[in-house]
Image (cartoon, rainbow, N blue to C red; front, side, top):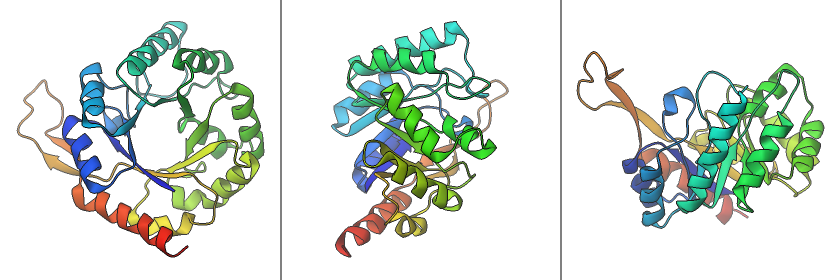
Length: 242
């Protein structure tokens, strides 16, 4: 299993890299579940030398997008590719399931780079709108490379049964990335589930100075060196134990 750290600022890139991350998911606004980062931050990640994938999410508040929002996402994917991303994390829903035309447009825009469908799938798994086997089949049909999921649960550790079933249904043809409230002490539980990577933000809240009346909350999330290192150590223990 690889260690993927979600970071939303320049400082987090270096912290994740120094702490032993295999790659990063680059976004902004972690408190909103993540949004598309700026090109400047992407270029900083590229210069650091770490492998990075870019979250493509044009706004918060759900995953059903207008045609204009899909167009913006497609453009953002092109920017991410130009900035050196090894892949993108995408997703879109309709009332009934994955938005196939939107996902297809995003896959095409990625031009052969890795495409992972993000936790919009947890909406479907949680509601029972799709089974793990059905989701795996749909993802393969759409030509994506994998999925980031908590198994439809608020925390991935609580969705481990669904995650294991999904990995089994994928049969090695999809990259299964586990994310959602993951902590270092949870990692050993995923050892025999067939997942490809562990995903976490490894973040803590801190104060970055007063934001004033127009700057939002004073507290921000920052990537924590001890939390990244603890996750790295937990993964290394799984490797050394065979």
